[in-house]
Length: 271
Image 1 (cartoon, rainbow, N blue to C red):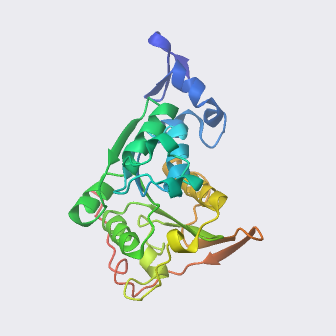
Image 2 (image 1 turned 90 degrees about the horizontal axis):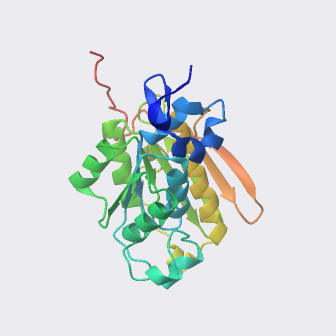
Image 3 (image 1 turned 180 degrees about the vertical axis):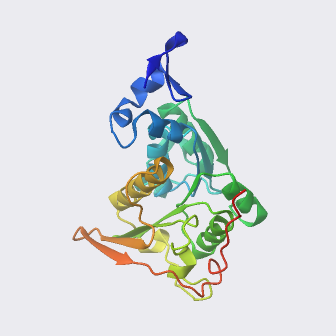
């Protein structure tokens, strides 16, 4: 049941949005799966985006435009001319500026009604754990295994869903690791943290510009679905894309019962 309240607010079961928000998010509200309730969940959510580069750019753009109420951007790098081929959040006149600050400025131009926190730092240690603890969803847009594993451990510790993406050359991948579900694998189940994986950087290997847009958009979509609680997430599945042939591969990821990160996962008892 909807009713128009004083001051131009539409009230619906104890939640309210003003007329401007109703217009801005009207195409979401028209979707039966989202509606007023779903959009309110987005407005109340906090997304932590770690890495404000190729993947983080489309991720942040779509989260901001969709109305995520609080977005925290974390990146200790600065904008470089070589970034602009694919990192669409940044512009030529912001070369040399911290990526988190540049990204925050861009998001504010899209949606000035949301809260944007720009952190020019490396996500690690207790600081990372504290950031993850206060998030509704974490989006890993980083580019190295040590950071990815640290993010995964923090998400498992605090039962926060993690949306992970990666892209190099013409190959991309995306998955969801949802520590709220005891049956869901974690990132370490897929890439054990005690095994060595060769680090590959786009600075030496290259990356197809639209690829990061495709993977980043998928990450944003998965995050929005998790927050609203619609559809089926990619938890337990890894999606691979070969952009040369535009062929997708869907791989099931089993939970490793001996995983040192999530095998001892416990949930607090209900009150």
